[in-house]
Amino acid sequence: MKVLVIEDDGATADYVVGGLKEEGHDADHALAGPTGLELACTRDYDAIVVDRMLPGLDGLSIVKALRSSGRDTPVIFLTSVSGLDDRVEGLEAGADDYLVKPFAFSELMARLNALARRSPLKREETVLKVGELEMNLIARTVKRGGHTIELQPREFRLLEYMMRNRGRVLTRTMLLERVWDFHFDPKTNVVETHVSRLRAKVDRPFEQEMIKTIRGSGYMLNVPA
Image (cartoon, rainbow, N blue to C red; front, side, top):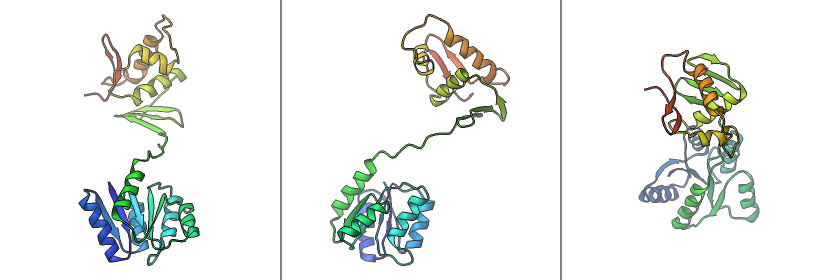
């Protein structure tokens, strides 16, 4: 786990940073609010520990600025400001937890581990890329090597599924279920026909093929060797 500690008290900072490193984690330290905010916005952390009272920029302002910028890194306040209203204010500003000084490092570590276990919200992909093949899910466009490829809606859906599962063998049954929403075998060559059409557009105009037939198993899309 990589943690940013924003704390102006040297003894507290040394205690927290030292404890994190003893536990095998990486830790960066910022003494002042502006430096802490810059680190939080320019580097990736698994969690941030921040004091409320800081020189230059207070902890509440740091958290609000992070959330306004769209960064969802888990934040825990570690502070001597202990009133109920203060805790509520800190959580409403966007913090995920609030621990009051004096504190036990074991409790801080337990809270950080709990925050790290939370599954972050997945950002929806808007562009898929496999080698020189690129699909824009918003514009509904496909390009290979900069050349636009015109696809019918079902062909687009088939290619999207193959790109999301690049390097994986996709059986006929898998394609019927995920692309056509068939949970039975329609006893037609609908899959074979659409894969053939897709190949004609995605592979044949280019030197190397990306859609491969895995005999006896299914199909696979991958970057040409």
